[in-house]
Image (cartoon, rainbow, N blue to C red; front, top):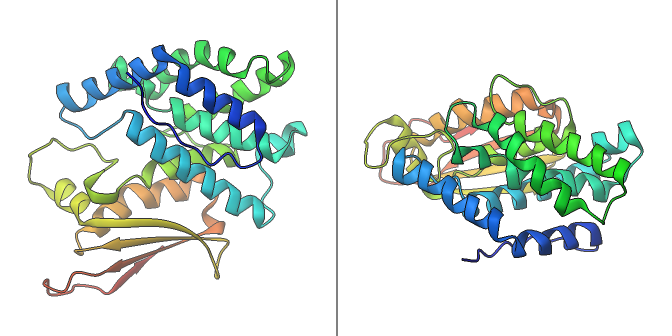
Length: 259
């Protein structure tokens, strides 16, 4: 079993080595499969496995890079004097492990994710980081993992980024609000209305999140999940959300929805 895990690490050699280790880790890939068995086959929820992880990691990395490019200082840099490349490692690892606790159960899965991640993090970060640096990176990753779920509040830039990226995995029915497969309700209709999600360099604010919907029902997904994630992230002053409706067949309730 092998999943394609592609991350644009650019000139970040630390991230490159870690991604290579992730690709080669059979146990981690098996756990991703187990997370999906629990989420999809047993609970009837949406994907929480390798595809979701890869999407969230890429979205988080893009979001962080835009923020850093507009002079937002990552917390691992501000608090520990580390580098932007280390912040990239934190958000990617936070994305990789944030849902792994689904192999245990859905309630409090973020807490189980923290416990499971510890074993992997030590291996992935050695020998790339010295012992003290490993401790710092691990603490930041664990916070990002646990803070992606309510009622926990992100207290770092990196944790806020991971939480928002998780909520942005909503294209083509990939809802982060769990709903039963085959059940027709507002969750399902709203999720299926989301056609495209883009993270762009912004004009009004550093980051513009552009969401294209086929139907006004998509607003529910944005308002119920994405908006609270942004509001609790500590990054709301840097992010502008624009949702536009492309569907021509419905009687349009609204043309555009903004946060």
